[in-house]
Length: 205
Image (cartoon, rainbow, N blue to C red):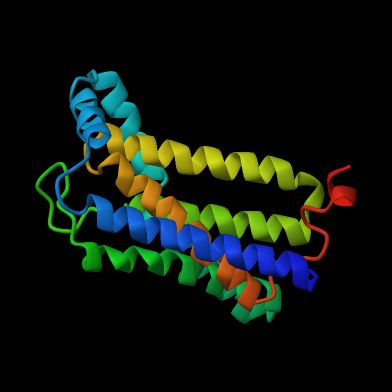
C-alpha cells in the first residue's frame, strides 16, 4: 500500500475514533430522544423477538472474541506464522477499545454493574469481524466482498440484539463500531496488515 492510500486509511481511522469519542461525550448524560424511543420500543417486543435476540447475543459475544484471539495466538505460536500473530495482535488491540467505557461511565437502560458506552458485545464482534476481513484480504481476496458483507451483518445483528434486550442504548452500539473500526484501521497500518491493491480499481474489476 503506497503512501497516499496509507494516509487516507490513517485519516479515516483517526476520524472514526474521534467520532466515537465525541458521541460518547455527547450521550454520557441524559439519553437522547432516539435512544429512549428505541429502548421503549424494545420493551414492547414479544417473547419471540427477545428469544431470538438472546440467541444472537449468546453466539455473537465477547466469548467468541476470546476463542478467536486464543486460537490465533496458539496457531501463531505453534506454526510460527507471522501473519497470524499480527492478526491476533490486531484483534486484541481493537477489542481493547471496550476499556474506554470506564472513562465515559454511562448508565445502562437496565441495572447492570458495567458502564454502558461502548457496548462490549459490539466491540468484541467488530474486532473479530474486522480481523477476519483483513485475513481474508491476505488469504482469499476473491472472497473479500463476501467477507465484508458477513462482517457488517454480524455487527448489525449484535447491535440489534443488545438494543432489543435493553442491555444497551443504540448509541452504545454505534460508538463501539466506530471506535473498534477506527483503532483497527490504525493498528492494521502499524502492523503492515493492509495488503497492497485492496480497494484499487484493478482489484474491484
